[in-house]
Each structure stands twice: as C-alpha cells, then as structure tokens.
Amino acid sequence: MNAARPLLEVRDLHVAYGGIAAVKGIGFEVAAGEMVCLIGANGAGKTTTLKALARLLPARGTMHYDGHSLLHRPPHALIGEGMTLVPEGRGVFARLTVAENLGMGAYCRDDRGEIAADLERVYGLLPRLQERAGQLAGTLSGGEQQMLAIGRALMSRPRLLLLDEPSMGLAPIMVQKVFEVIQSVAAQGVTILLVEQNARLALSVAARGYVMDGGLITLADSAAALLANPKVREAYLGE
Amino acid sequence: MDILIQQIINGLTTGSVYALVALGYTMVYGVIQLINFAHGEVVMVGAMVAISVIGALAGSGLPPAAILLAGVACAMPACMCLGYLLERVAYRPLRHAPRLAPLITAIGMSIILQHLALLVWSRNPLAFPQILENPVFSIGGAAISGVQMGIILLSCAMMVGLTWFVYRTRFGVAIRATAENVHIAALMGVDANRVIALTFVIAAAMAAVAGVMVGTYYGIAHYTMGFMLGLKAFSAAVLGGIGNLAGAMLGGILLGLVEALATGYIGEVTDLCRWPIVSGWLAERCAADGHVVLMGSNYQEVFAFLVLIAVLVFRPSGLLGERVAERA
Ligand SMILES: Nc1ncnc2c1ncn2[C@@H]1O[C@H](COP(=O)(O)OP(=O)(O)O)[C@@H](O)[C@H]1O
Ligand SMILES: [Mg+2]
Image 1: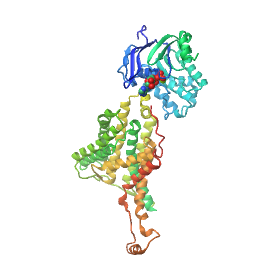
Image 2 (image 1 turned 180 degrees about the vertical axis):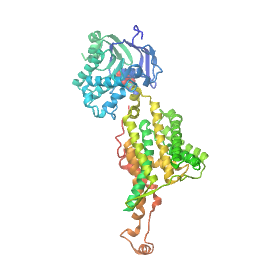
Image 3 (image 1 turned 90 degrees about the vertical axis):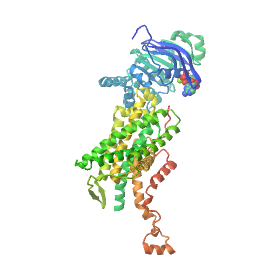
Image 4 (image 1 turned 60 degrees about the horizontal axis):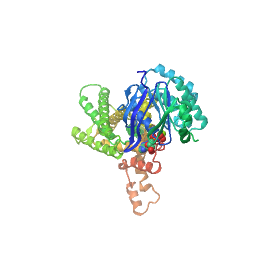
C-alpha cells in the first residue's frame, strides 16, 4: 500500500435510483487508521453512499480502496480485501444463531485457528454475545443485534469498517455501549467511516467529519471545527 | 386393522419420496422465491436415465445391486447437470425480472423437458427391469417389501444428511444466510450465484434418487410421470410451509399417509350400505351386492390437492411456515 494515498478515496461519485439522483457528485477520503464521520439529516444520501461503496448500488465516478478501483467489483469480493459494511438496520441473519452469524463474518477466511482466536477476542469485547451464542439472532434486543453486527464484521478482520447509523433506534445507554465498542475497535487500528444522524455523538468520537445535505457534501473539516461551526450547531446539533 | 397398518406402510413409502422431492421445491424457493415447476421433470429424467442404464446392464451378469447402483450413479450426475443448466440458462437471466416471468419460464421448462424426454425415450411407458428380488416381510398382518424398506431408510438417511449439511457446514450456513437476505450474505462474501446454483444441484441430486425410487417401486416410468409427482410434492412443500426444510419432510410424509389412508378407506366410507339410511331400492341392492360404493380408490390422485386447497384456505403459511419474512 502506498502510504501517501488515503485508504479510501472517493471522487465525483454519482448514485441514482432509477432516474432520480440521490448522490450528486461527492468526494471524500479516509486515511488508514483514521476515524471519519459522515453526518447529515435523514435522506441526505449517506446510506446510498455506503451502499455504492459496498457495490450494492450501481454508481458513477471514482472509488478507490487501497489503491484499487471499486467500480465493477462484485459486492462479495470486498470483505476478503478488508472492507466491511455494517449496514443500516444492522442486517443480522435473524434465523441464524449468534454463533452462526459470527461465523458468516469469517466466511471468506480459511485460517481456522486464527478464526477461533478472533472469535474469542470478539466474545471478550462483547461478552453478551457469548452468553447468547446458541440463540437465534432474531431474538436479541436491538442493542445486542447492533453488537452482533459489529462483532460479525470484526470476524472478517477488517481494515476499513463502514458503519451505517449504529446508534439508530437504540436506548441511550445502549448507544453509549455501542460507541465504546466502536472506539475500542478504532484504537486497535481499524480505519472507520462512521455514518450518523446523531451528529454530536459522531463528532465526539471521529477525528474529521463531512456534512452531507441533499446528495452533496456541504462541509468538510476537523470534528472540533465542525462542533464549533455555527451552521452545524444550528442545523445538526439542535442549538 | 391390517388395512390400517398396510396403508401406513404404503403411505410412509410414497411419503418419503414426496419428502425428497418436496425438499427440492422448498430449498429453491428458500433461496430465490421461485416455484421451480420443472422439478418434477428432473425426477422423471432421473428415473429415465436409471431405467436406461439398468436396462442396458440387465443382461451383463453383474450383481443386481451393482446394476441398481450404477443406475443411481448415472442418474444423479445427469440430474445435477440438468438442475445446474435449468438455473444457469432459464432462471438466472430472469433473476431480477418481475416474479411472474421466471414462474412462467419454469412451466415452460417443464413442458420442454417432457417433450425432450418423449423424443429420447418414446411415448410408451418403460418397464423398470425387475432385477432385484423383492422379499416381502410381514408386520402385524401387513406386508412390507424390501423395496419399501429400502426407500424409507434411504430417504431418512438422505434427509439426515441434508439437515447435517445445511445446519453444520459452512456452505450450508451460507445457503441459509442467502435465503434470509441475499444482499447481506453478499456483504459477508457469499457469491449468491454459486449458492443458488449449488441449491439447484443438491435439489436435483435428491430428485434423481427419488426418480429411481418411484421407478423401482411402481416398476414403470413414463415421460409424463414428473408432472403429477411434482404437483404432489409441491403440495407437500406447501403443507409443511414452503421454504422450510423440516416442513417439506413433514409435509411429504403426512401427504403420503393422508393419501394412502384416504385411498384405503374411501371405498368403505362411501359405501352406502354402511350408512344408517338404507332404504327402498338401496336396501335391495345392498342385499344383492353387499356394497354400493360411491367413490373407490381410483380417486387416489384427488387427496393431495384437497390437502393443498385446505392448507391454502386455513393455513396458507403451512404447518411449520413462519410469517412471510420481510426482505431488505
Ligand atoms: N430504494 C430507494 N429507491 C428510491 N429512492 C431511494 C431509495 N433509497 C433511498 N432513496 C432516496 O435517496 C435519498 C437518499 O437516501 P439515503 O441514502 O437513505 O439517506 P440517508 O441515509 O442519508 O438518510 C432519499 O431522498 C431517499 O428517499
Ligand atoms: Mg441512512
């Protein structure tokens, strides 16, 4: 990997649903080891951006991960290269057990011994999952499902983790726990692109942020500067 | 009493075959929500290939068991290729088309396969060479043949094997994950095309074995045999809850039992002489013939569809079916 280049580099990205543009030419980058957040109101185009990166939606423009173009790659090829999306709404397999869900995170890996060690590590980080290993994921609470979705992603040994609204629909205490986990994952050196509607929370953990509105990126700055920005304070921090 | 036991044995036999075929419907439905109406024809092709191989080897002096095994060993790969081709050629191009398109294609494939079989194997029923001796054992006044025991035991073994595969192997878990949400499975690195193709191939392998079973059991195979068998197995899958593996097994066995018992008792139940209202000319005829039967065992084919209708009316999700899952 070229150290001078960011791990993820997006230029002039366009995504449309049918004829209707949802992302209208955005650019951003995430350097290796960084935690960057993408904030914006409901409908701004954040999820659409992540789905385009994960190749679940057709897109136009430039998307480079680790120096390689993501365009024209099949979605199932990305996790093996270290880019893992934790989708909006968590997307756990409700009819699979917790352990099977975690196993699916390591589906692309062959290193059995290492997988077992990673499973222990995930259970160490998220002990609730170990207690419920044999339970169907659909029977977990929302917060536990979010933990499971993150744990499953960790089982792939990601280099770049894309998180889509991990706080959505969770009780405040659960939100806090989920963000503690995210911070500890970041502390282990995993690069994170965090999408959040909860701007205050996202800016409190990320180093930099992009503000998205109506399919465009309207502001880009350090998290501290965005937190201090009057426009951000008014529009996204409810002040 | 011996009728009861006999019909239970017969029902378990046909029911195990229905279960194997129903599993094919339900697995394919589980991953792509398609009723593969050509699945019955895969069973037919399995029976036909086996008959051809067994027929060719019948005079060769090989031991009968080896000949039968050779028949199965050819029918399975032939059907697996056919299942793969069906998915690859007929259904994959329509993966994102409106749901009616692949459904109609499936019906079309069923007709095409029947007529290809007609060209290859002629319109006459083919007799399955009776190479195996078929000892008959008696239990409780009823008879069970070696072939029946073989069918029931082999079906059970295959169902156990399939369950093990789907619940205990990495690829089996991937199939279930894909069935639940193909996009999330792709995010986990699952190539949906491979999983779907594999599902068709597994379904076809079981269909091949089922084809050899029905051929051996009834001693006959015909290019249209897949149609009725397919519809019944489909009914069994719906009875159990389509998309649900245990449901297909349960539905198949239950349907076989219902069919056998209904066929066994319908003559007795519809015998007017056994009803209390025997009057006038009816009394005379009863005195003369002993029976005035309204419906006989020739109504056999009706029961599966009565069951299907009853399920659709009273429990559309089937016995073990869950609520229709929301899909992302
Ligand atoms: N499947 C879809 N079909 C059509 N339009 C969609 C679809 N998903 C999202 N959109 C539209 O695209 C825009 C961006 O949505 P989204 O990316 O989900 O926003 P966010 O994640 O920022 O809340 C919205 O206007 C939304 O209505
Ligand atoms: Mg969103």
